[in-house]
Amino acid sequence: MAAKIFVSSLFLSLLLLASSTTHTTKKIRAHSPCKRLTFYFHDIIYNGKNSKNATSAIVGAPAWGNRTLLAGQSHFGDLVVFDDPITLDNNLHSPAIGRAQGFYIYDKKEIFTSWLAFSFVFYSGEHNGSINFAGADPLMNKTRDVSVIGGTGDFFMTRGVATLMTDAFEGEVYFRLRVDIKLYECW
Amino acid sequence: MAAKIFVSSLFLSLLLLASSTTHTTKKIRAHSPCKRLTFYFHDIIYNGKNSKNATSAIVGAPAWGNRTLLAGQSHFGDLVVFDDPITLDNNLHSPAIGRAQGFYIYDKKEIFTSWLAFSFVFYSGEHNGSINFAGADPLMNKTRDVSVIGGTGDFFMTRGVATLMTDAFEGEVYFRLRVDIKLYECW
Amino acid sequence: MAAKIFVSSLFLSLLLLASSTTHTTKKIRAHSPCKRLTFYFHDIIYNGKNSKNATSAIVGAPAWGNRTLLAGQSHFGDLVVFDDPITLDNNLHSPAIGRAQGFYIYDKKEIFTSWLAFSFVFYSGEHNGSINFAGADPLMNKTRDVSVIGGTGDFFMTRGVATLMTDAFEGEVYFRLRVDIKLYECW
Image (cartoon, rainbow over the protein chains, first blue to last red):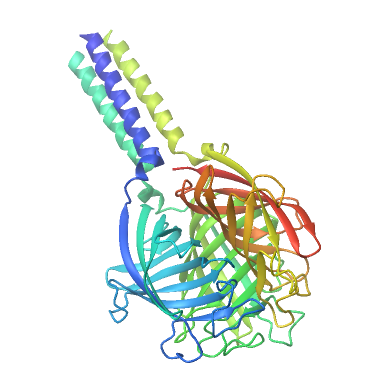
């Protein structure tokens, strides 16, 4: 009988060990986000004529560029600051639930690719606070992953990965991005 | 007797399970920073006349702006690089214990709001190493939270939230910020 | 006998408690990276004459600077966008296993120091995905630590510290950096 008890106790303890390992091994959490969100944001680049509607502007450019037209050589070196509306669907005229604020740079001469750092600043409805992003955006790829490097408010201390997709574009003035945010650290 | 032992063992095991969960749930750590620090930093923007005292300079601007005067439309698009002294109190002339180095952009046409990424680089006294920050700074708000995205030296691998407050300003040349740093991951 | 069993059970439980604490205390992980990688990257700044070979370009500069020559006052305010080849050894002509893409700013008037944010984008061979970096780079120091703030693909959700060393430079056009990446969070 006593031996049986010992075995029970051992079994329980081993079970616990497994459980404790499960909780602390990050590998497992990686496979299921603690929060998942999808949004769209809309970028209208200032071109010298659309002052009223523009949501972004070129503020840095290489020696061969200027600030009202994306530069040659795949826009290499252009730096764009943006304040883009965030919507729940793909309609530019849907109510904005926040703003995507930050900048991107075009950073390759041979093909279009960019690097961006920005925040989603939510101010109404379901979400409050901000999510901060940074990473490479090889925009000719169908999907691109950037890092969620932090957050505040509802998104306090969060981390994760955001998948960007170009949902639509018109010439070199309007770009619509779909963002699928997967958070793996939720506090 | 044997049953009693089994119960004791079970009880202990459940206790352990609870304890292990406590240790791994981030929710709990969120409520008490592992480190808390308060500093001030001082930004003097170059305006064409204050070369000697300036600690920052406009290096990018939209088509309608220039580099010795913050642009119209709420300075939208201005990009400022800074190397600001960090002090323990709100006196610009107190000994600097490090430098706040990085950049900010003004990123909205309608109101003053910015986005910043920078480091606190400590080089003397109590603190050595660096803390890295990024996030949106809606500077008309009394307090704004940005993310602590990493650190080195004494602040190895740290994460947290920093609350910015505009402590004083003079025209559009001098800005003093108070920063309340709350670290929730300390290695 | 029963008492002995109780003791055994208690002992096992305490052992478990210790084990669970070990797993969740970050202090311990800090001393041994879960992954360590060393690379070189090569930066050739556009100077108006090297259009074909240049891998980077000045795109922002202070009022006293321009975009084909690094500015006076320790290049303070110069903002450089780059797309630099990453190699396994220190030879610029070795096969590139990815690109270092992002930007740096010179951010001090008195000495050469910079701040940078960039990604390593791997596209071939052993590594796929990206690693994102940010931090202060006081480049006159022999070694400088910046933060690894996130990653994607093979480097999903990673964090760590990267040590930069200037391996070689030629005038103010070519810079070769050695990067020793130590990851302390591997998912």
